[in-house]
Image 1 (cartoon, rainbow, N blue to C red):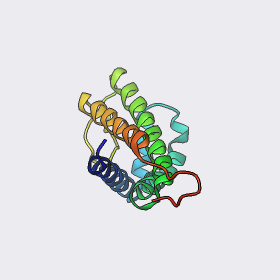
Image 2: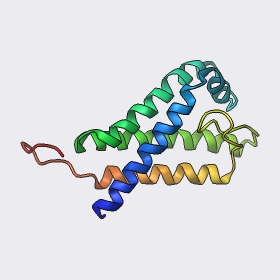
Image 3: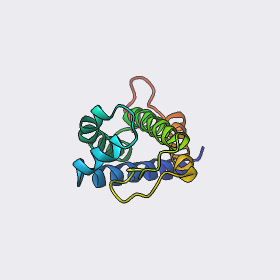
Image 4: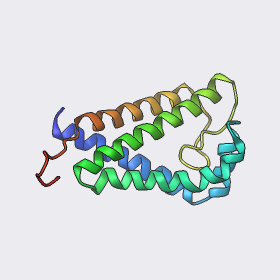
Length: 143
């Protein structure tokens, strides 16, 4: 994979995660409601609403500015987040629950097949960064 394409994927993932996290941090109560609407362990919604946006911002920042070895770890964390989002969105979609996605805070729009596709593509991009991000050989400084 070309270094330019890898950099574009990494920057796009970082931007999506940081923007989504910051938008959710603006109104954690509304985000907790969005999470509870998925009807998957609604009792955990307040805790997820507190932790998830900060995690998204941290993972996004790691993809953006951390050394290569940490960017790979961040890509793995991003892939895990997108897999979790894909499962939650897919579950609601398949159960016919008509709810807002909550992907970018409030007002994000209803869950559709495009929401599933977007999450799948983001997860694939994170996995590509994980696969192709170089790590420094033992004893060499990371870039």
